[in-house]
Length: 617
Image (cartoon, rainbow, N blue to C red; front, side):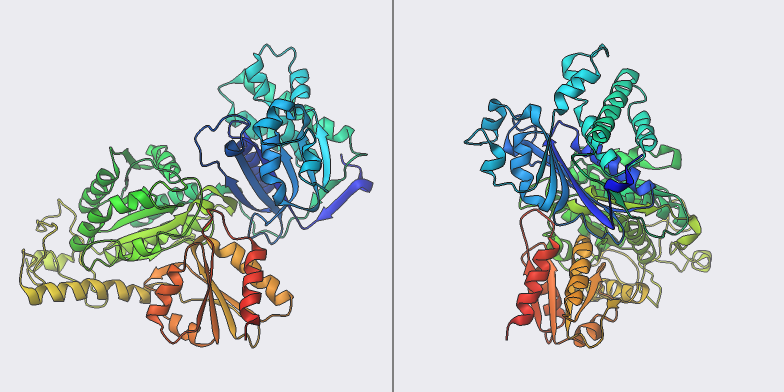
């Protein structure tokens, strides 16, 4: 138990684990997050992977980080951390800028030898002085104590050294009063098939915890407050897993089997991995030979009556563009998931951006409108994957789901929902009376929303052909008539526009008399909402809204924008959504906050930028 006289109680804390890409920082960070979520805390994580594959050990380019904010009213992983764990000099050098004034830095002092200091480009033998560190530094002999704990384990030295991340985890668990039995359960699941490694990691975990207990006179421990949570089963979930599970829920609610045709690409591959595990739920996940095959296999599955999905990132979305156009003209339900990353080309494959928006809206030949939606957080990926599937099926259209590396890899605490919390998805099957009197044609539509009926192959009386050539509006036969082509183009466009009547209206968090509106879209939600709250706390009246539906926009968008003298759009690109809104609503006075560094916003960056815009005369 913690000594109560040395415990600080906080509403939230931020911890950052950092080390080489092979040091297991993502693993221990995820375990700490899972345990905290299980205790009723809100969590938000930011896995910060190196852009290089296996950079030289100890080099600055090979540093991997994992930051997590734990507590109440948590919307972001935090701008800066209260505690930094640095497993080597390179990790310290790369991450010291992320430590709060007065924070704590825990270093594995065993790794601060001359060779490692040189690898990290230090020019002196005192890295702490060289970096000008004023934070409290706790020098812990992590490596040597790990070796001591495993002296009789029978493991080779390489295997022993790989366990040292759990010494750091044990120390952090002591520091923040995390229950060791919960950590042990996660270890038992992770290493169930490797009993020797399991026992070794348990020993090292206990050694780290006990070390913290023994040095309690040197450093204070912390207790993190947890808020009132809605009753239910909670877990920590990342955005890619939530996306996969949302698709499965949509399959259940639509009664249509789920098919994923995909090709591995960072940072979207985990969606393929997760769905490949779910054969028990009837999921068919197929790794295709390339991106084009991925989308084309999904189009075939859609024609055959499946909830059809293909997943990718920006480069793959470009390759899929012709296939998506085929799904547009054939009017088939297709969900295209784009987990956005830094570009162009290969760009920054492990970093986050929102730079695929214009590609999603317009990146196809011809007039090729599709619906576009974007989740706001890791847990919202579940909801918006379900929504993308619902819109695709009920409106017979491709839907592009724009997540990003930040929320795809990041995680939040999530209450597992009950099935009855989500509506039934109703496929627009061909009406029985049209089949009976043989009056049905492949492009017959509902009058209210212009949705083409879905004729599943094998349905008696519904034999038909679809393809990439233009079709006659009435008969569905191939047509090159100019007037008919224009009619079909306008009909497909109007069909997408009418989806606005089937999505939620835009909601605004608005203090009284605000004349400035801060808005964003997709995965920037947590940072922007927190910034708006901070601005209001400072006495600046700033309203806030966030877009999850991009095309079509919510029906009340024009009304919302017209209420404010100044609209500020913050996004991780050069201003794509701002340009989109300006083109749709030319009378709106739109200012821009942009960042294209492969990193999410910092709350203080947004606060400062909004303040500067508001202070301009």
